[in-house]
Image 1 (cartoon, rainbow, N blue to C red):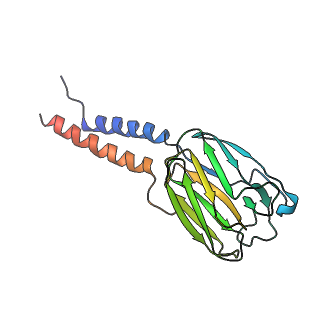
Image 2: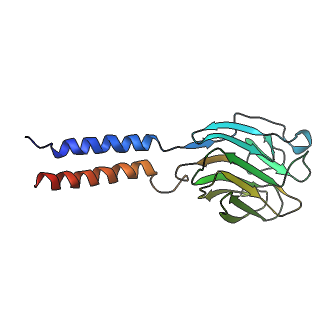
Image 3: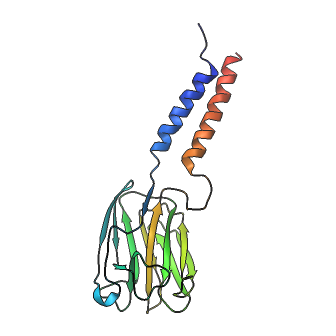
Length: 202
């Protein structure tokens, strides 16, 4: 009986890894499907709902502002909250129906001084970030390697004022290493190739 060739094993490995890669969930939400007033005085609390690869996502605690009057770092639609807003909270909460990983987003400080923010999930993972004042530099890409299903962004400042935008998860943070599906494909091809060579030497 003729033994299968190494090429056949490599093709099978590539197909298997591509199937695995296609199941890797990936989402980015830039909030441009919503619009709102330019300031909090004309806004009220708003719950956002999205369909994602990790199931439904609900965002609460803030409201949508578009081309906001007092936020030099961003003139698109952003989701934000402030102590003088109508029914707004000092926390923005994102609730998924299943756990996510590698959560990242733009965090914008609406204050005229440095502000400390805490990002946490429902499994006890917590990180703290200090964001510069409300200037064109008052925005930071925050990366939080959560494995939970509820992410909370908050500050202890009683005069809170902050925003989020460009929310992503289940993929590499922009500017970092190769995304997982590509790495898995290369690793899978290599492992199956070695196994095929060993089998044919028998």
